[in-house]
Image: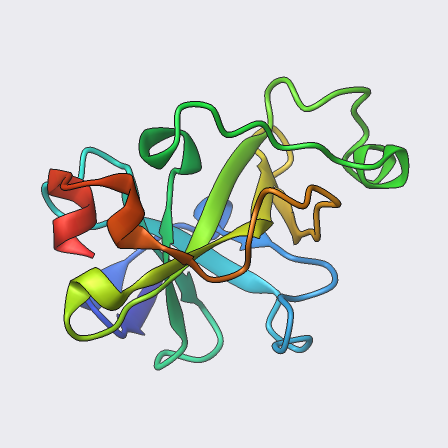
Length: 151
């Protein structure tokens, strides 16, 4: 299938590559189908979460573990059950990045990660009850990194 994207122009993709968000994303309840596309040169730490229904809708997401090796996500039992798992092992986590100018003013949302079950390609955005993680954590606090500079 062909898709006009926000950052990559027109691309070809297979329906099996889509990630389904049954409940949508926060603020985007009607958006359920996305592609996870890596930005060139990011080493897959910086990606684009591109809507397949709305070409202009795309989010910059980052691997939280590449930013903060001590990042420890925690899901509630009910959230684990929605994924059909007993623990977070095997789930993929990404954090939304609010890209600003200058890039050093950009923030990441460590509190509400996007969680993807790679086996089912089902995803949800969750709110973690961990006070140490903020919704607008300054990207600059993680220090100079090649992948962060690209953001």
